[in-house]
Length: 113
Image (cartoon, rainbow, N blue to C red; front, side, top):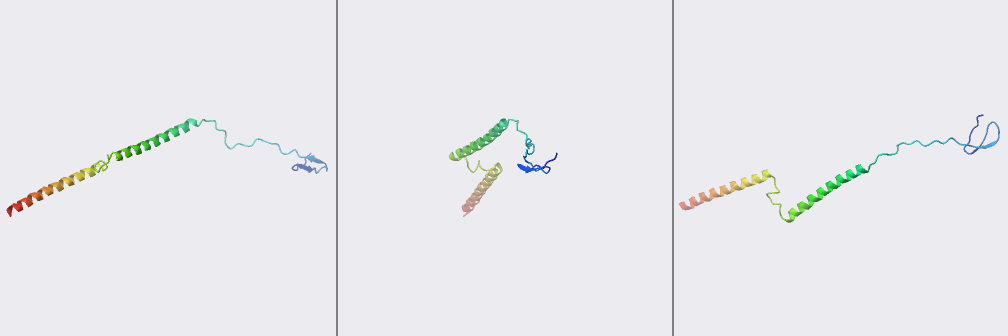
């Protein structure tokens, strides 16, 4: 007893009686993802805490450097590296010694005149 089923109303090939099509049996739609049963709130809280700590450190650093600039704590000495400071100090000492030697030589020369 096979019948061709049309969408809503159709004709049977065996008899010309009209009938209402029952339609295909319905089934539940397949799920691509299972429902999430994990509580994600602690993970989001941990991420938020870490980000807020980073932001607080950056803000603290900016405020500290602004205060140092306001108090004129940055000079040529403490804004340079240690090697640069030592090099500048040695050059200044050498230049001072050179001036002293030149003054002695010039003084002796002027005494001879």
